[in-house]
Image (tube, rainbow, N blue to C red; front, side, top):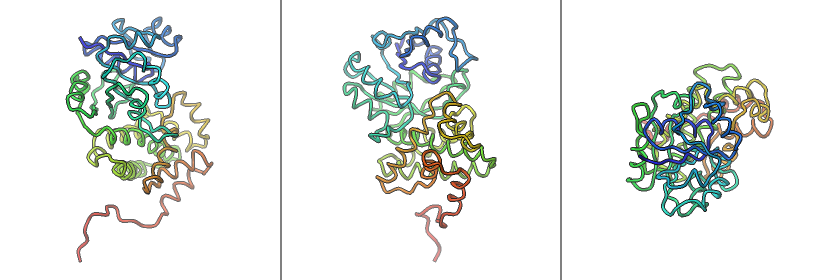
Length: 336
């Protein structure tokens, strides 16, 4: 039986714990907030996943050492803004070469590092991997089918993670392109904010399709310049995750965007959503990366102006639409 410690009992961490428990793993679920663990023990439920019951086979704890002790696999499932601090706390309890699978999605604003780069910096003795794809916790926790990608530097590590997670409702592919996976995972949240803003403004399906399509073009352009592989952005952790995040009401980024499109400030929207809106934290980092790599990212630029400079959402859309005409694909030849 595989022993797994899930570090972070938010909706995604809890959904992963439920999935792995059903797969026959011995699962321990940790939270830094003792009151949260006590409430889950008392009610058998997560406050943001009211439709599912947490089985007694999942061990709940607020003791990080206990959550990590004698585990075959560790899943780091805290929001991106807490990854560095949590990884630093994990360092003293981690044995050499232990696999840590990052499932958070973001880019650190100060360092412009991906989540796996942060973990490697804080826990140099860990073997860091990534799990990403279209996987809203609300659906995974209920056993609705989806597919994801396990990314690692070593093939056998990715295949091991694949074997642990694979189930009739959770199909897992493997990839060596951790960087591409994480860039796609982080930046799709910024595009989802834009998609939500368009919804809040009352725009239609055409607008949504255009944002998704041009959004993945921006993400791919930057990701490839950073060293990611183009194929990754056309896969589950790229366009797959982007589609679901832009289209679903489970997406806190889309929901925040809708509120902003309706006239809420960024702060008011985040307060209303009542969960961490990752795209707000990744938006500045995405713009800084675009400038660092000399990459044109007009959607990301406009989202930043709306979030942090008080630009009216409708004006941002107008500026996007009235940009100079461009060719869609630079490498396609014309007839002479």
